[in-house]
Image (cartoon, rainbow, N blue to C red; front, side, top):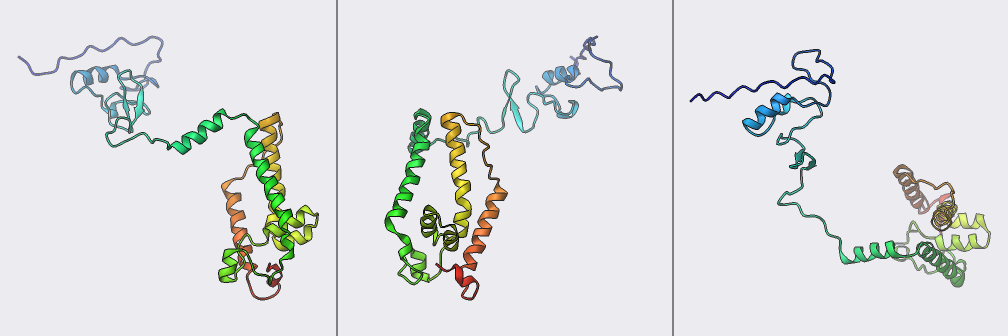
Length: 234
């Protein structure tokens, strides 16, 4: 008995496909039939080097494996050490509540929080405490340094009373950010509740990073013990 592999007859050419310009070349997207047949008779896999670029054969090594129907599946699927991540109960509860809640719940909840902050600011009269009074900020109380948020409540109080220069004196970055935050809330709530087509602000990572950097520099400058930076002390 001969051990040589029986030769395979070449398949008839498809008249709808253009003829190959070079020996061994194939139309784009076609599979080499001889390679598939010889692969199935020998090792059950097709050599990756015999296929056109971008074409993968079942059983060929690569970033993807193949299902029995020829569809690719991710390489990690079925891996014994891979486990599908499971969400905890709190996350599932929050997401389920968000999906099942009416559209007006989230905007109303945020509006209630903002109204509570405004009520607290008006009720506590923060401007009655000057720079030399005993601070309530833990960082300022323990170190004497003005923290990045110091003066924000007093700035809000002055804004509510229409005194923009005094508000900027206590926290300039807070005064700068308030109009953008209010507009973002109005655009989001209006679109969610009334389908308003207001342009929404997009905060890219670069914009957020630049704002945080400026805030950090401002926090350092307002703690310098010489003029004109002492005017920022609150």
